[in-house]
Each structure stands twice: as structure tokens, then as C-alpha cells.
Length: 338
Ligand SMILES: NC(=O)c1cc2c(=O)c3cc(F)ccc3oc2nc1N
Image (tube, rainbow, N blue to C red; front, side):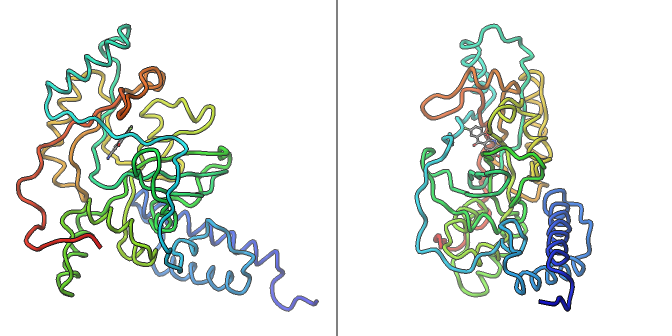
């Protein structure tokens, strides 16, 4: 047939160019927190892509920004088995318990020097999530569940703008597991509760419950409205993706398109770990999200692999907790999970 408008390949090229532009703008805005495009420009390009995809549905790709919010509410979540189990962290409530953790792992690895190298990460108070990528595309997302199996909530996680639908690398591994914390910012938490109060709805008790409750919503449109966020903290994959040290794996996650909590710090000895912990006890209250401790990890991946896991916990990491806040964030009203 004679082509009146631009050729099909030209349209396909435009669609691909729009996806690229929109993904870069979205990464800059949601992951780097450094917008590079006016909202009005973003919206115009987004609508142009939506129109192209409506006219030519074959152009729709799973990583298109138009594919983040699905329509149909699920009838219920499937239970899925994690490719790699998700463990919980052992807790330490003071410096003495931190030191006893240190002694315990050192008994199993006596030849490790005192300045073994620890990485401190602020512990985000949200919901643990597992993301599965295949050939660079997000194929599944799940809650931690019991660590071996979780609830399949891919459609809900696709609505989180700081979760990439495609890894930013032109050589993606055949599979990649990314773990992290889905959370609600304090601002968003307060906005949601203000709205709920206006409509006489039960309030969320705290941002963690709000995030976990949101992820259990069957309708992705509701999840999208809540505007959850995500910090990645671990990466597992085949071959050379599997032996990155802790600090390098966080940098790698950032380069792949994930948000990583920016205040992580490498500490040569436990003294610096304790210093970091007390420095951030005050500073963390200025952050736009809730934290409830510091996760202390051994920097060396070889050592992590050598130490492995107990039934429940990694031997090479511990959560050093801050005392729970006495003043509850929002407990005046009865709250239920919806
Ligand atoms: N909430 C968090 O900010 C956070 C949580 C975990 C974990 O739960 C966790 C669990 C493991 F078995 C191993 C490493 C981990 O690292 C982690 N790192 C973090 N930054």
C-alpha cells in the first residue's frame, strides 16, 4: 500500500527515541533526583508515545514508560519461590551486641585483619522486595514473604518510578536478582493521611505499614497513586556479577538504574562504624524517609560468601538499631490495614 505518512520504520524509530528520552528523564528525576526535562515537555513526549502505541500496538514494549500502570485488578497474589532466598537481619541494640557479632564471625574467619572493612548503610524502614530481571527486563517482583516464598506483586512494583523496567546496560546478564526496600517518603505519608482524614478513612500508623499495605493492594492504579519509592541494596547474578564487594555492588546498582541510599560509608574498623551510627542518630531525622538503624556489612564479597548464612540470618551483616521513637508518628486514630 502506498505510504501517505512517515514509513513504519520511521514511526518505530520515533517510538524507540521517545522511550529512550522518557527513560533518561525519568531516571534523572526519580533516581538521581536531578531533573533534566521540564514536566510539560515530559508530558508532551509521553502523550506522543502513547498516541504512537495506540495507533501501532506492535510498537509497545514491556519497558515502555506507558506500561507501568496495568489496568486489571488481580484476583489475588500468587505465591512464588524466590530464586535466591531472602534472609532477615539479626538485630544489635547497642555497641556491646555489635562487638559480640564481630567476635562471632571472626571465630569463623580468624585470619581476617582488624581493619576487615565494613560498609554502613542507613536502614530504611519499609518493605523488603525482590526484583527478578531476565536479559535486562523486569520480569517479576515479590514480597519477602517467609524468605523462601513471597507474594508475586510485579504489577504493583512496576508502578514505582525508581524501579527500572529495563536495566541500564547494553550487556545485561541472562538473570539478575535485585533486593531492596520499598518505602513511602514522610511527605507522601503525611499527604496520604491528610487525605484519608478528610474522607474519614482510617489513617496509616507509620510509613512502613503504609508501604506494606499499599503493596498488598490488588489494583495497580491505587498503588501508582500512592507514589511509593525504592532503594536497592543487593545484587546477585551469574559470573562476574556475583563477586562484587559491597560498596562496588551499590555503585553497580546505581549504574544499572536503581536508587541507592546515598549516605552509605565504608568504615575500616568497628570504631568508625560506631562513629557513623552516632553521627546519624541525629542527622537521620532530617531525611525525607524513615530509618530505624544502620545495616553493618562486611565489605568483602569473598568473606561474605565464606561466612554464608545461619538458618535465619547472614553471618556477615547485622542491623544496629536506633531506639524506637517514643512519640508515635500518627497514632491518634484507630488504624487498620486496607
Ligand atoms: N532496610 C534496609 O535498608 C536494608 C535491609 C537489608 C536486609 O534486610 C538484608 C538481608 C540480608 F539477608 C542480607 C543483606 C541485607 O541488607 C540490607 N540492607 C539494607 N540497607
